[in-house]
Image (cartoon, rainbow, N blue to C red; front, side, top):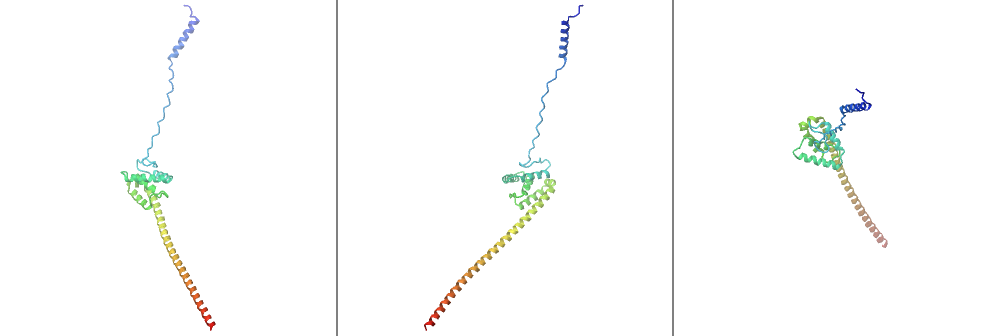
Length: 213
């Protein structure tokens, strides 16, 4: 049998290589990276400034965060939040979280929407809520102390205003009395001057009469 020609050998080798390559599995193209799921949306349980979930009742941290947010609001924003809470208190969701929010708004310095005496009533109502009192008993103590201090200052200011009005009234009366005394003095001075003038005229007449004699 004659030996294979070089051409035949190279053709045979090429066929073997092609067969081997066809048997090797080709790498699959890289799969696109899986998109990460978006974070779950956190829905506010009440109001645009409340950041709690309200699952087990509001916590002290959530209440303080709401209070801190209220302190950054402008006057018109506080007014809108006050109206919103008043609407919720008048509806079926009265009490609970809206009552707590209204109480926290009432203790914002300089809010001017809820007077201190009404704030005390809100605090008493919140304390009667078992869920709120169980979670926020210590916070209610602090709020009670703060409201008591404000009522004391308000009473002192009121007493001071009454004292000031009374003092002003006395000073006004004394001023009127002094003005009347001055008028009476001026009237007496005028009368005395008139009497002196009359007396001088009489003395002049007597002198003339004696001179004529």
